[in-house]
Amino acid sequence: MKKVVLATFAGGCLLASAATGFAQSTTTIVETTGAAPPDEVVTYVQRERVPSVRVEGDVRVGYAIPSSVELRSIPSHKNYSYTVINDRRVIVEPSTRKVIRVIE
Image 1: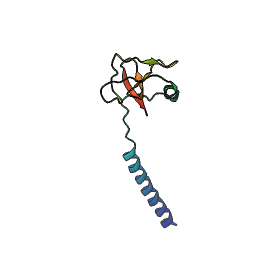
Image 2: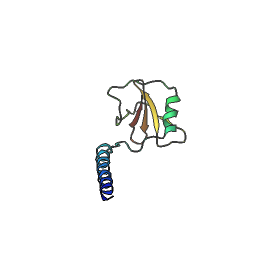
Image 3: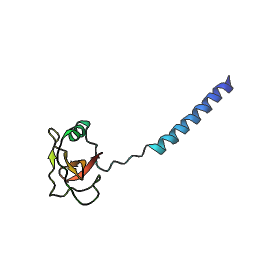
Image 4: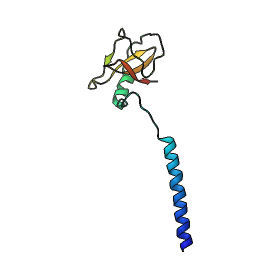
């Protein structure tokens, strides 16, 4: 009986240590742009039809939108704006004009 209990305990310890090691190696996520926009914001931007504007540079998260590009507001979501640049829809933080999400 003691051998069964000891074997069960040892097996449990092995599983726990394996799970802990797995969790430590896969849980590091760094979000540099703050909270992700809500799903309804993404859906709204995907539905809207606006002309694309051409700009120089690689438009990606963190890119500062030039002041010459019009940002469009999103109803009931003042913390987000959007535009279409180089045929890519982007969600923008209006106060900084920085791209926080590119919709592919």
